Image 1 (cartoon, protein in one colour):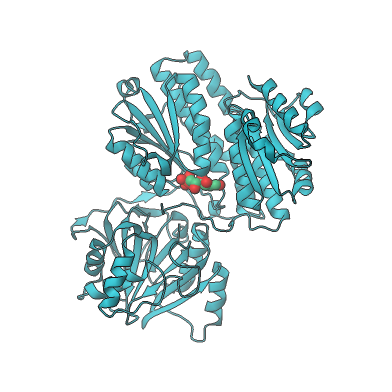
Image 2 (tube, helix red, strand yellow):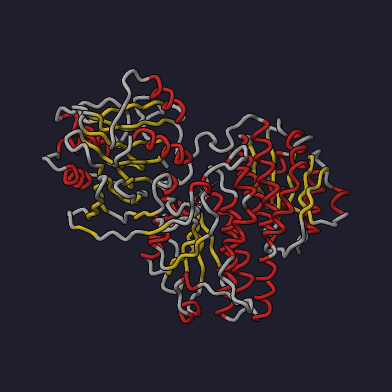
Length: 609
Ligand code: F6R
């Protein structure tokens, strides 16, 4: 949440900063601003999307030049998205500028104290108090002043600070929210996420907790909060700039839906040996530790939570271990029963979702072993877990998760089968059969993408719906939840996912003639029961769109429309069935004129609780 970018080097900073913001806009898009060291600190900021800031910069009378600067794109927490509340924020003399991602929890008491001491506040944000704290603490060294300010803050945040007194340096600090340093040649960058620095470098250093960085054109210095220097451990990112572009697609979401076959293949690659056995050394769990697991917890949010729900069915079925799946923001507040025999899986595309990060911290604190399933190399969740299984989906720029959802499910299937392999709960032949089936998933998803014309026709028919229900049983239930989430976030149509058998316990009251009901009705051991549930909504006038297995003739007799998908094992079917639902949400969103890549009120990577 909130995109941060900083640059120090020989080039004009402004275009680099704006380009960086363009690549981070998925992190927040309700206002944007820049600060460039141009004599003093020159700040331009605007409410609205990045284009508003670009217009303001174009209209600026005196061009902004300077080789050091920072920029921000905001997802509002404290204070409405207005020009005044946009970042950067300045101290009383306009000499110190601050941008910020996260929340300063004690900002009100700090603000009261600083105001009493004569500091002038002009915004409603929590961020502004940091500029005044740094002003108060500044005695000739910006990094020291930032350290001093941070000592007074509580919350989870990343900050970047510049000062007219030291125009060649940007100072960053990470306390829970992400910050990376991009290492170039004679130029360096600072950003909340990798895509912003790809324009200059693929070498980066992720900041660890409570680290402060001083970024200059010719040097990067990382220290802890006491000022002790920390050696740099650079890493290389595999993505290139092209991976983060639309490449001819109308939107990132459409591009990412179409990238799913490749993303699935990349996630499976290198994890299966020639005998069909799994090799997951990345989990960093010895065999005796795996044997010792008595219970599995899965913690995640949103779409990642739905992937976790699918994993519950797979892990319980293949390993016979009990699995509890919990929304990460609830997990640590209910005192879950964890110990050294529990294994916690933290699922997060970004690896930075604060609720999931705090949940895995809680689990580790209670002695549970923690494995991260994430798409983001060296993210906070990856670094704090005992082991990590990366989904190799590549950068996801659309706010709605698509390719990362299917790869999360596959990474979780791999984990489940690996546990079964080590614990001996499946025969080797069964494991290699499942592995073979999984290896066919990329091709099946590719075939499903050809349903687009049929999906478009359905989208045209139902684009004006007020409510849409999604129903499914067994693994069809998490798919129903995911289908409903995609539709509501992309098209703003009210949608709900329910276990199909639960409808008659209340939600069926919502069904009236003409209400579209999307039913997940692929072949599985509860197929006949799903058919009965479809009959129940049909009897009340619903129009049923079924997603069913190719060759199923029975479904055509009860559903109004059928999207046929290829047959696969019922535990793997969510990977295939989800795709037409993503496409339906996308097509309806487009017909309704919605910004499908940047839906209102949302941001990718939710770093506030
Ligand atoms: C919805 C969506 C979100 C994320 C959720 C968790 O399309 O993408 O629900 O799944 O915010 O994000 P990560 O996976 O980054 O922890």
